Amino acid sequence: MALFVLKRALLLGLMLIGLILIMFTISHVAPGDPAAVAAGPDATREMVEVIRREYGLDEPLPMQFWIYLTNVLQGDLGRSIRTTRDVTHDLLRYFPATFELVMVAMLLAVLIGVPLGMLAAVFRDRGLDHGIRLVSVSSVALPMFWLGLLLQLFISLKLGWLPLGGQLGLLTERPAPITHLILVDALLRGELDVFREALAHIVLPAVALSAPALAAIIRVNRAEMIEVLHQDFIVTARAHGIPQFRIVAVYALRNAMIPTLAMIGLRFGWMLGGTVLVEGVFDWPGIGLYAVQSAVNSDFQPVMGATLLIGFSFMFANFLIDIAYGWLDPRLREAQ
Image (tube, rainbow, N blue to C red; front, side, top):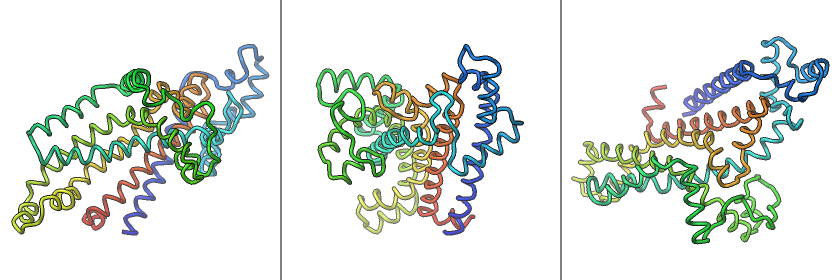
């Protein structure tokens, strides 16, 4: 198992360097002069050249890439031309909100999607199966931002059950940061009122964000469970009188979860990259809006930093999925 984990960790490092190279290339191929944007429309050529030298844009491309790579590996993602702040500082400010939203949305998708996929497989082609498939198809058909608007109109405005947007109320003070995740910090600080308020604010955006992942998890888990439930070892287990619940929830689910884990890993990455729509609808102060505003202003350092952070999070999530593969199926470890 240790060798299996080491190989996956080395592959993770190579993929990260490849991502850095791709992002650096794209940022320098894209139209627009960041130095001219930072200097402003009334700047002289001399002022633009001063800014270009300050940010190292006058160096040859190979040298610029080497400097950028060494800086990234040291945790330095450069400075924003638009705000003049360190990109790392901005990402530490915005990313926790996005990460918290994605984790809650993924938790909802997994806790609801896996059991529904199991039930749909057990009651295949019956009323419950048809109802669950209708839910999954509807979740895929509705765009996240449109579902978010519907939830706001019905749940927040019409019924008044949950807040319309934001992370906390305007008059609520954030808990002193420990992890920079409001829900976790509120629990660690013992501020249960703040925790309940933050939980109420995150429900609607998390539901909107989790809908596509929920549908995908249901469909994949249902298909895999149907296939596993017809295999010989399941038939043998039934012949030995093992309870049906244990057969389905332990033996069948463990084998069906391998493809489902792959879908969970993919959806986690898509959630991170697609939060900008949900964040816009619910006024969620996350990394998506930060990256879009930077891209509009041709401020490539924040865009590259946000993309690298999202890409690394995606790759690290799939690294953990690979480790889970090896735990669920020892044959994968032996094949390495």
